[in-house]
Length: 100
Length: 490
Image (tube, rainbow over all chains, first blue to last red; front, side):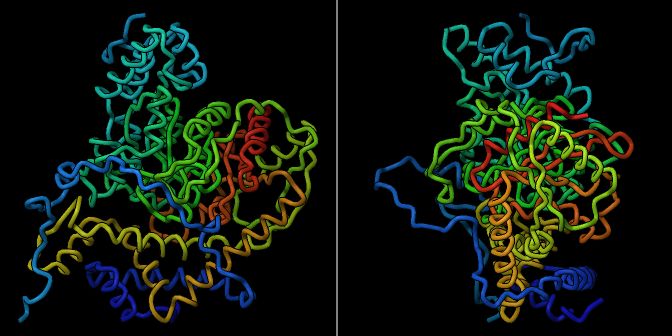
């Protein structure tokens, strides 16, 4: 077990990732991530200061097309997949205001 | 020729369609010598017999497949050519979108979702006359190397059902190995086509990044994902790659070039080619696998290739770079599963709690682990130390490959460090499972093509896969070398 990641870190990250984890999951995740980060320390020995990061295999260029009207997805088919929809819109529970 | 009813016993004294290559089947169907429906019924009969034991599929599409096969037969009867894959049964990994047909990614979070469109590769297979027989099992969201992470239970290796088929595309590999389909499609983010192909004794190809459109492939790690085929012969893999590759305006990362021509040069041989042996390859491969790779070098040398020792120093660091980059991208891509637009929702009094409960209930342990790792690697204070550093290591790996390819035409290595392993062997230790990908990951990071071809057997008679790696857009030479190995396999 390393000190590379703490229980508090894991609780914070779970919140960022919108994952409700049990106490048991938090403990197990902390141990497993610590193991992995320990292994991943192998790249610390590399001299990387002058290396340009590589985000994908090909340089990305802007892709444009003519402004022709193309058929889109069928709205009713798309909305049919929603857990809750009304009048062609997605319905969700309240976002703010529950706790006053 | 009469259609075979799926309930009939399959006679053992005739050459069954499911022992034959896609090229042979399509040739007979196009010429009217064999009906697509007969081909299909023989594959459905094989599925009926062994699928309960193998569990290659999440969904078998018998009715839809019969309709498609009859349409192929009708086209032939009317004098039209249904295409190069006429009547060929195909199994699709269940992370490829199929219109109106459930696409689950073997996750509870997408249970019941029916995509409103077909993936580009699915459209191209249909247009080539192929017949989709089902959607295959995978490690949830393609995260894993054994198919044990599926929410619907594991797939078994048809060659030894006490062992895993590999993963994440284990269902497609098993379907092709078991004769359920002549062709499978999978996706390869860190080896998810090549490793299961090796463990099931079939051919598996990861084309160059951007060769095959990902439109309609459910995203895992967008800078790494690539779709490719599983087949029982190298020539079949070349044909399927020709069918599915080529520019697609619907995928902005699609290379603006037509599909490569591969079939015509397959038999050009390896005389005069320089084949690289990586001298600083990471250790950890089993002796039986290494013996198979040594035999492959001997076979290529005997066929006229020059074996050249090369170094690819950054290869060793691929695992770390990958397991920081892929989870980081996954944590972002999987943010879309929020219970709002599709899939599972766990009701709650407010939206944030709904998100957290939905994702907790819908994702399995490995997916949660990768989301956590990726979110951590991207989070404030750790971005530079982990994700940023991994992107620099990725550059070193691509540069080391490019240097090696100045001296050699292809590289040859193990595909997987081991032959197929027993269920449960690596499930307790996530890192042990990640090490399965040691030899396949670097080409995803560089974007170069790579494929595996069966070459002899190792422990317990299980197949050994040999990997052929080639420079960017170098599929033609890669297939030539793979074909030479296939022709000389022990």
